[in-house]
Length: 447
Image 1 (cartoon, rainbow, N blue to C red):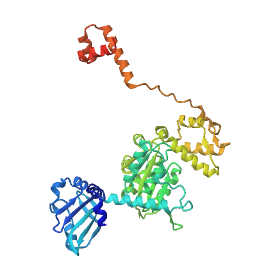
Image 2 (image 1 turned 90 degrees about the vertical axis):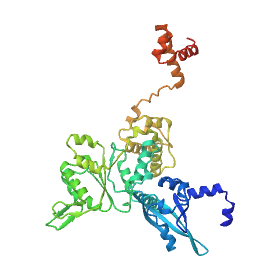
Image 3 (image 1 turned 135 degrees about the vertical axis):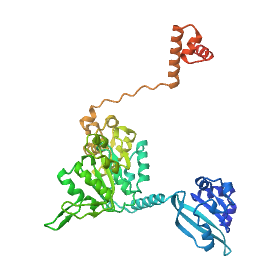
Image 4 (image 1 turned 180 degrees about the vertical axis):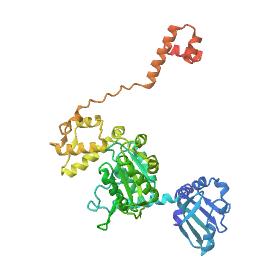
């Protein structure tokens, strides 16, 4: 080790020290700072030159470096409250020839949420490593299943990574077929509840008279039988309420009470049951419009939309089209047991020019049908639905050089001004130019 350090240039050692840990500090046996990295100084809002040499407790609040020096016992992954938030810190005594000469401290995570995010990420990664096709649950989605590199999709993925470890309720807005459930399951999969139930209910798919029992459960006294509702089934996990805008107003009041109080009362019972559920909701109709129409409770709206994710329709993110189409194509080639299939150029043109009112789900269904209808290794337009072939080819505007266009406009305006007015001072004033600039342009354009 000694020989390695001796052969490293000072600049390399400096880079290692600055990047080996996010934030760290080294103190001597008297708890005075010997070294602190620049990133930590920026967070503490101190100049490094001023921090070095000072007692560590004058620079870092609530520090325990002096305790580690005194006890000689390392303090690992210990919560450290600093500047209004909790962090995880390591503090290790430095020992030379059996004597404590100082201590080394590092911040492992900037706050407790960083730890939660990493915990969720590690769990997801391990699941990916250990999961075999037979182990995988049906229709279970992860963040990695969200395809697309458009700015809108990248932004949504980043937001999911930030909010998933929390228990914030999330409202997912988007047209039918945009994949709202995929995004909901991605949030659940990155949360601390990932190993617990993800329960879903579609309010538009269940008759109104049955919906209450489905959500809150029921108790039949004559049978002494309790049937759990979706809230109880999702206890300690996540409840995904799809098409929440279709929920009757009477049930909305009961849902609001269940979310606020953390308890449900099954139909036919007077006994409440405690539940700990994270709420994710989705709608394909703007809830604001429903509120104006008196069809949705405003107080419930504000309760379920701590965070709102708007999933753009496919027509607004056509830069993701190729990745989506290729993903579905490979998926159904394998499912159909075919060796190889490609989209012909004309087929791809039809697909790209279509407006996709059914969004990603419609694209998926069209690709699936085309795979089975293809007669050879190339998917021709004959394998596509008729409505896709009725769309005219997009007319792209002719692009011109911007500088040339500006100069043409400038020449035309000056030429017309010279026809209407002979006084150059008046012309310059009308065009917002100095007289010298006007003369230069007249000469430039041979006017």
